Length: 298
Image (cartoon, rainbow, N blue to C red; front, side):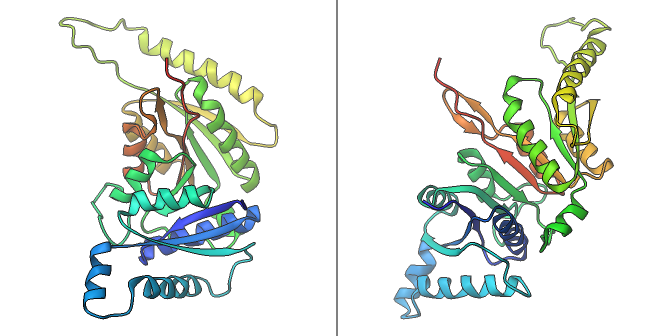
């Protein structure tokens, strides 16, 4: 089956920005784009009882109109398809992704419904918890880019939070590839989290934080030596709560894109951890969320 990028929309301006990004990625990779929307079954039933136009026909026509109105000129896409479903948005979007063999999902963090201040939308949240393919989350308020040059102008630095585990290898590979493609610099960040203990009277020895910093810096030295010379990269060690520090560094260093991994466990498989979730709540730039290779049961 032909590879495709899936972009779910809800006809909001936020999803219009996501659509622009999805089309740009599809055109650059020379693969197809699938634009989807999900109808509310209650609304469809009400329309049928009222003798109105069938919701599926109306939705498909409005979907095509939305796509036409998004660009002053159509992007150079290999092909564009439309998909409609009826039901709960997250489940249906994941189903469409599976049926179309989508390589990537691009969606807005907040759309026309389910918006909560400082929280990603519930649909995006559930997709991230259950996805098996990478997801690009476009925050509300980001209009999207029409050309690759526009992306290069806005994404001059890419941030990759690092947890010093072997699971970081795929994330590092993606971040390095994107940085090379955009001519952007790469910033590796490890956050040394405060150690807390429920044991009465327990105190961490004074040198512990310095040792943890030294370990992180040693890890970064090895990683930086192995990166391609064509990619400008630097590393930073910070102290504090991971999500807050990631968001703070992203803002302070004018990061244009964050690459993060979703966690995995033998029981749950790919799922979104609390740090990733919090970063998505705080981020003001696009985030690439990468599902890990599923872990085998112990």
